[in-house]
Image (cartoon, rainbow, N blue to C red; front, side, top):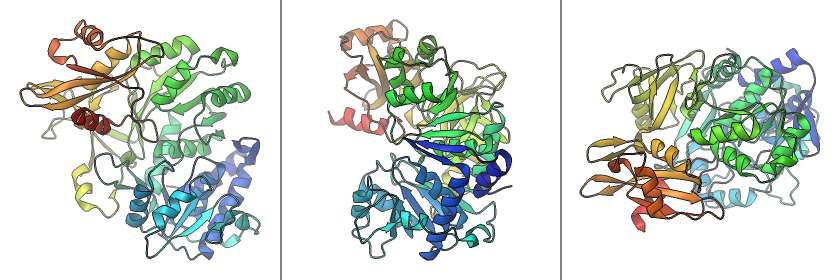
Length: 506
């Protein structure tokens, strides 16, 4: 099984030199990418970074993120990707928990890094990817001015079972947990995912945060496919549409919030988007109604996959050449086994709802320095995802809801996603999220948070009546709360814990 650095080496050997990264007006070939990775590896070794040391990368998307990932793994250190949007207290926790020896950042995130490291006794080295007049910061440009240290390409290779990445969860249910992902986890997942999509991606868009495992894996797939990536520091619909037109982009990966933004952009007809064939959505459930509307507007499919950080991350995907079933998350990718089980761990029959569990080379060996949490999710060689799902007679997976988001009202199970799908079909609704709140009499009651479309007028009573026209009264929302926007994390996932707090504290 190859290592992460082999992705780039094999890419060069297989495809030769070609433009690998586009960023603004800049262009970097795969050869340049390898050269910069070697320079970063040499720079880290000169700082005293040793095998197994953790190195944080915290900055908006840019080519230096991918250079750094390759450089860190070539130095046989461990990559710790961190969302630059996190609060400095969250970043401080990750620095302490991972015992990071160095942080690679940029001017956009440097102030947060300084605040996060301010109280630390042993401060990690800080490396900046852009020019800063700050004596406490090491300049990466100085490394790029040095000739590549050939020693970095002849180091003893790591074992495939050694940690390559420690990825911290969002921490919405407590302190963030560091998911350990080995070289085998990440390489096997990228290779299996690439195998179900036969065509080359050619030029694709890097709109997902590279600090998130979904964005990281998409970039790994691009090495395998010989694809080019147009990198965006942030998602901007106008810039994305312009890039689709310029590079004749056929497909790229997104999260549902991006599909929303693209669909509702009022000036889409100004761009030639005829090359666009498919979007692959992940990270959070995509309302079926939105995918139908998107296809009608852009003549491009939106297919869903399913994954989670602990599975490196892809578990299911839509296959090229195999029919896609609307509403499904596709089929398990090669090398990944799944089961749907009840509360005792017994496998359920097709079309019965239970917890989705996963087994394969992609599954994490556990959480960093957290045996208690590891034992909660890894049982008998299976990863217990906490997601409720069902599998049809053909093996297609349908996500029902997060186990923790299940609403139990008067002893009856209510799945928020079913209600959300119904609500977003209303012509006045932009998006919605449904939660359960404690209720003394019924155990839980259903509350819907709704974002209206601009200029739309719809009342709470009308929305409740709309739901009751299609659902039993006990499954319909008891209360509707209209908000300007739904709270989201860095990859656009709706934060239902925040909504629960809002509902309880109103």
